[in-house]
Length: 175
View 1 (cartoon, rainbow, N blue to C red):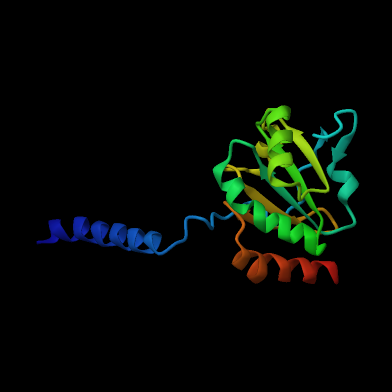
View 2: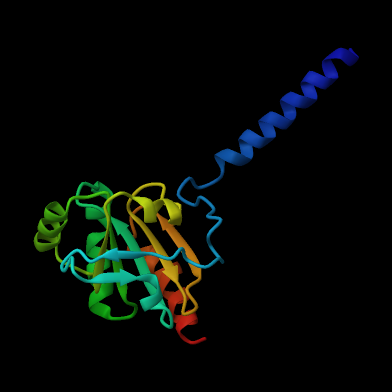
């Protein structure tokens, strides 16, 4: 009888962990970077390769960094939300063209519209690695001090924008 108690106890613990895991949202992966300084970058701009976008240029304001690519289906899905947000002028949006070709990215923006103030090119994906990008699209809210305050994995939706991102942006802008 006692020899069955230990395996049964282990079974109960494993079932408990599985039950908890099934209740979690897979889109809400915790990021160790939230609450920490955003990784520095200095990359060529998509529209003018002679110019550079640097994370240091953006300190002092609240901004969004959106990793995207022309080959990304989710990026097309979230694009109308980004266009709408850019038109509202509530927060500047900077793009990070991730593992893409310059020609395809430019064509994509001409076709679908450009919500970004500036787009940097992360052709090799090194900046994406530093930011912990799982896959595009991903969006980061970065505060005036250059600290990541929120990470959205997957396409932005209007409900996420209105319920989480914009309230956080307004709060950070007032600090």
